[in-house]
Amino acid sequence: MIRRCGSQDFERICTIINDGARAYKGAIPNDCWTEPYMSGNHLQQELGEGVVFWGYEETGTLSGVMGLQQVRDVTLIRHAYVLTTSQKRGIGARLLSHLRELATGPVLIGTWADAAWAIRFYEKHGFEIVSTGDKDLLLRKYWSIPDRQIETSVVLADSTWRKLNHNPSVSP
Image (cartoon, rainbow, N blue to C red; front, side, top):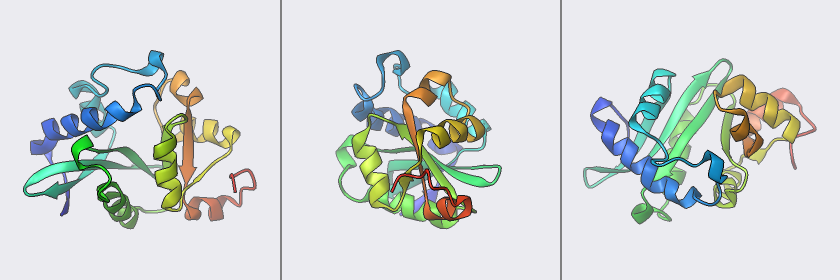
């Protein structure tokens, strides 16, 4: 079952993010990696900035989460993580599909450039990497992240964004 997460899920969301983020260790530059990957304070900040988490629940326990954030004229998919013990079972795909249905307007996703598996996952679901120049502009416009993270990230866009922007610099 997919449901909107509430304040009662705060600790579980933190646990899922930090467990799932272990896969990124080594893909994220060492100078960007933190322990824990997402602190409670950072999660609270993300919630305060409008990230709404949705969770996949099995047998009464959340095993995956994905955030949705409306920023100006786009919807961002944020912080998509599944417990390592629950991965490769379609949970991420179901969450992504659900959030895309809730999205208003174009959908953008940012992830680490060296996280090839994450990029493949989003490409499998119809997203395409935007050009480096567009990526930098989009990350500065829609995200609040440090320059170093901008440098080491990619942005993937859905077909709605690509159609609206008629942008030849979007990767084929």
